[in-house]
Amino acid sequence: MRMTKKWAAALLALLLCFGLAACKSGSAAGNAGGSAAGQETAAGKDSVVIAIGSEPETLDPTKGWGHGNAPIVQSTLVRYTSELTFENDLATAYQLSDDGLTWTFRIRDDVTFTDGERLTASDVAFTLETAKAAQGAVDLTYMERAVAQDDTTVVITLSRPTSIFLNTLASIGIVPEHAYSDEYGTNPIGSGPYRLVEWKAQEQLLFTANENYYGGAPAIRNVTVVFMSEDAALAAVQAGQVDVAYSTATLGVTEVEGYHVEAIASADNRGFTLPVLPDEGRTTAAGAPIGNDVTCNIEIRQAIAYAIDRQAVADVVLNGFGRPAYSENDGMPWNNPEVALETDVAYAKQLLEAAGWRDTDGDGIVEKDGLKAEFDCVYPSGDSVRQAVGMAAAEQLLEIGVKVNVKGMSWDEIAQVMFSEAVMMGWGSANPNETYYLYRSQGALLDDFYNPEGYMSDVTDGYLNAAMEALTVEEANENWRKAQWDGTTGTAMQGECPWVWIVNLDHVTYVRDGLSIGEQPIHGHGHGLPLIQNLQDWAWEETG
Image 1 (cartoon, one colour):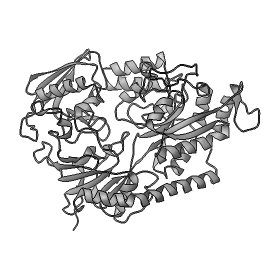
Image 2 (cartoon, rainbow, N blue to C red):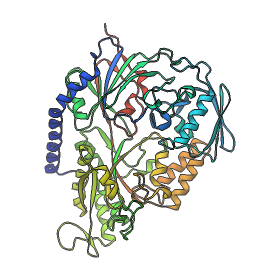
Image 3 (cartoon, rainbow, N blue to C red):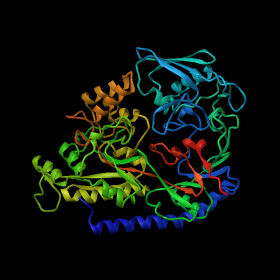
Image 4 (cartoon, rainbow, N blue to C red):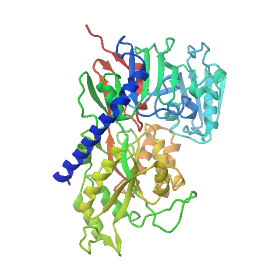
């Protein structure tokens, strides 16, 4: 099914209005951002000014800095390649015991922190123990202890085999035991390619190259990261005040002289949850209602999944800056390609008809036993992309007689209705741990955003646990794929369908001509931070 011409024209007009309003409101903010940066861009060909949308809460890796990305101020034991495999960083070698419980890492002996102190295995052990105690974004609940045997050997003991351990280590920057304090997150010392010069809260971060970095000093010596909304960032690009700016599909079609747009592939997806439990009057521990009598029907969920034309949404809503999404991990090594499905409106109608959903009163909405196939889908107010994706899907679903009311709310309000209504969410990570948290029965109906739909399955839990405890990447990936679809059941949309995935967003980025931002890996979910994870690879091209 394609969008009607009338709807496509109306939606394009709506998005154009978003863009024009954004440019008008962003011009003043863009000027302010240029002033905050405090330097001419591209002047010495060794500096960049970058506009991103989200300010980090901390630069402390033990509390989440670098989670899912590379913490550029600190070094890690291992790091991701652009193909999402692993290579050594601080580590020179590592081995895993036959029972999968003991990891032994050998580390470099030529690394110093930016205060001149040598980095040793004791710092590695201290970092991991501190991250475990913090109980924050870094999940190390399965780690029993980390011990430095000598200056270049650290032994890490797990309570159970955990296949995602290398993924976790690739995000944990090593902090100095001798210089760690409660203020570390705002004044960090590290051994990575960059060091922090200054952090002006809600304005900017200033970094400079670590001239003693063991990997070689980066070509870009001075980095200013300013925090701007997408509309303000576009205005700053138009004024020539920034070199790189994270943007959106709704704004990225604007041509700006001296810049080009790079559409970076991502697993940053948009789709909506569908409560799988009926409304039986239950509430969560926080008092939020649980269950939805429409979406608890699997035929409703599957019909919705088959009826949506994802390519049409990507083309119209995202202006081509995106692709259809079929799971939380499209394009990742652990993805099951069999979860992709073709749009099939006729089949969607058959699913509903066979289950007894019919339009008995002629209003265009199917019903069963007096219950209309109608429910709300909420999104965070102010997010024009999520709103437009939701509206496009809702318009398409009218063809099969399902009515979805798209409503904007604050995140606090969403937290109170997400167990009983559909929610337009965004996920995407370079770590399969995300799949585990999205679908494990143990996490259903907790007061967080991972499994508000209440999905629970012993079969899925079996595959998830087997994947987590696998001793090889190959064994783990096989089980991650089976959790999605084993040929009979799974979390996939042709299976239990607790999610309807719609699109993967390209991370639309304005880049000043003459600047290379390196080979970007597939980005995870994030509002700009994935962009700078390879900052040491950026460089201005030689001109002459």
